[in-house]
Image 1 (cartoon, rainbow, N blue to C red):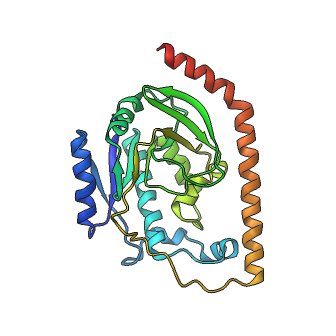
Image 2 (cartoon, rainbow, N blue to C red):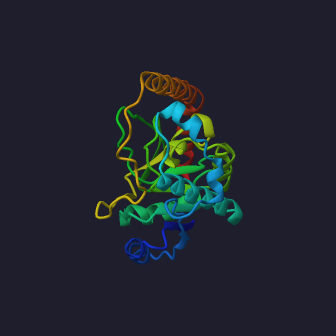
Length: 260
């Protein structure tokens, strides 16, 4: 079964206890990964962040907490490559849906090499469709037409990690939004149903979003909308090509897995 890596700040011991107790109950010994606190340290990886480029396209800079979150996931991707084997990456504020999480652990070794990343939670964003791909045991795997805007928990192979790393030479989006750009980073956005984890709302976010953003000028709003339109177009054409080139192959795979 894949190794489970939990991203956890050194100061967030309550969160660590919360997730570790759950993993202990399913017989998993997690590897704790000490998260980067962008509010406390200026990590060398922050040199990858292009604030000017970010503001031109999104209208406001990333927070220090968002930079720390990106750095933490980036380092875990490097860890996956070093291990040379698939891992499950969890943030520390998730709740396991125990039965389905166990099922995923059991079925993960049967996933094909082309399945490089699987989001383990439900995609709740608006206007997202799910393309049925195949089934393993009690789980159904789908291709999302739109990213879930969260990195709370995912299965990742070394091949997928290399692609994430290769595409992250310049940071200008939060890490979850970066992962959602499957048309750019070449890591297809795959989900699983029923969901295996969900967000634990007992914990407040420690990323530290900027709640006092200045009003955007007309020029900034125009550039932001232009960027969004370009992203929507690229996502649409990627999904269209996926439907044209992969759907038959996926249904064939479903049949072969059922026979197995």
